[in-house]
Length: 305
Image 1 (tube, one colour):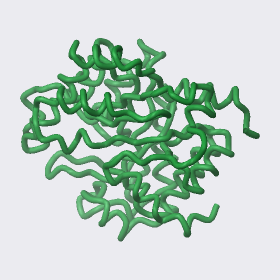
Image 2 (cartoon, rainbow, N blue to C red):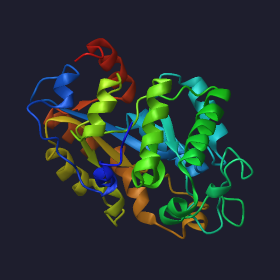
Image 3 (cartoon, helix red, strand yellow):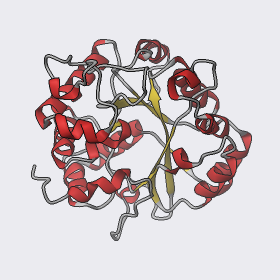
């Protein structure tokens, strides 16, 4: 697959919804009506910490979160894997992790430094930002680490419903993006992909689902009171399939020591378990879905459509 001409895919992680510009949405192609607003509410960072696990679990069980993804290099993965054994219906993918962004709470590549030296810094941990990863890691190392993270998941009993990218690393380099898509297609695991860019059509043609819109603004809402923001965002959803990426960290005493204290992240957790937001979703007639359902619908449609 030649992705050299589609470097504009970095727009996927720019923090704005991106509208597909075709006569029909991917939602329609997956069997929904033209006017339907279909939504995946997706909580990133399961496995990162105990607080991340608890917030995600409660938002899945008592709130509106329909999907999550797990950071396989992180310390609390086994705790979330145990939850999945008890709740196998959970829509849980892998948050493919090529960076370790905190100052003192760090994690290493699953494949190990000897195997992927370009992914490891002087401490043997993943680099702390995308630029350094891009400067040091080869596409072969990226693919090796992707496969290692999938292998670890399967080894501990997690069958991922989809793949996406922590900090958008895999969308910032066309060669990384190519390997991400390659592995997803080869293993028949949906990859986060949206819009009508040529690469999205290649993903669709391979038999994997594609979404129409990506909403990532919640991280930039620097307040613990996010209900008004979510209310506006939900009422403004466009037809088609949207994934809304959030971070459902539950407040505890340890998280501030990890991230230096970003209380605004707690706003996602509190908003998505609130009756107010549940009411908005019902009033707006928004259809909630999962990556598991998208794949089932894509299989029913067939590869030729």
